[in-house]
Length: 324
Image 1 (tube, rainbow, N blue to C red):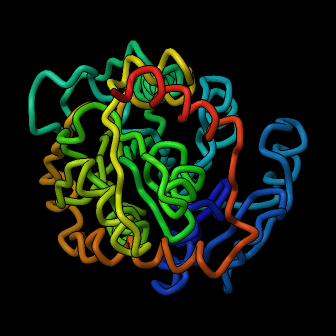
Image 2: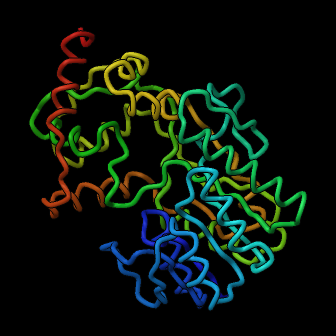
């Protein structure tokens, strides 16, 4: 197969790129070439996907069996993709988000037929609209779309807790740590290498055309345990303070949207659909292993320790007012 990844060097797409190369896929990246992540064996096409006319001219020289857009976030991005690739590819894959599923969650487990509805988070609503456009185009003009919905996929560079490294720094300094809600809601974390197995298995599959798949881990972790596992690897005592997500949202709108629109809700995903089409997909890397990679990476890479004093101050204010 000859495959184009738009993007290709992010957390999800880098693992997918590495596995694609291992599988013998002729892989191209279309991006600005500015990422520090370099994947051996990829053929680089430099360009800015947001510059439609330039992209159209550059890509007119190439033919691909499959195109994947990892960095489409709003309807305009998808409309341009349809213009670029309609009638020119056998499969177009859009990376949506499992956060698009109905919130609050009304029925578990979540399947691909769970309604898409998220009144809390604009990011999710934009992804939903992108999906609608693509499925409409599939129904009207047979545009060969496949939708993939990841849920909190991480690698060693992503700290999967509220406020990222700023919270990690507080933990290391013995300060109190906010955990949203009562910390008992269930969450799913998926290592990007596990995700890649399911994803690469969809490339070129005719059965995947016109279908949506979520690709997530099966391990269920309460948020309290996620924080405890990080503290354990840091060799520090966790000093948790539980704060309602609605309260956090009043102090930090961006974090509030992510919480109320996603992380504050327990999620259990039924992965039957992806496992049926891609039997080799399974969760091989539990978070107990992934958390070690994260802590080791940040301990060894001071330049990646992005501390935000404004967020740190905000956390103190929340704890002072609501932390008891």
